[in-house]
Image (cartoon, rainbow, N blue to C red; front, side):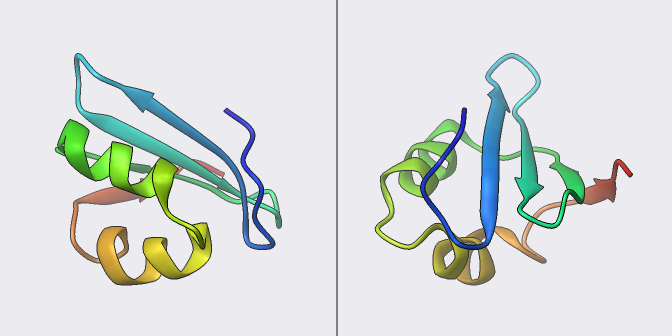
Length: 67
């Protein structure tokens, strides 16, 4: 899903696997594992996606770079 953000271009979430995929405006893509649905909802509802990502997602869940 495309989002309005100066840092993040797209956010995708797989509810079954609890995987969050984040695509940045730079084109870099990361996948975060074991992200609960409430964390995904909060991310989507946040006023600043970049700030929310830094405070609540980054370094809190196991991740891998896709590019």
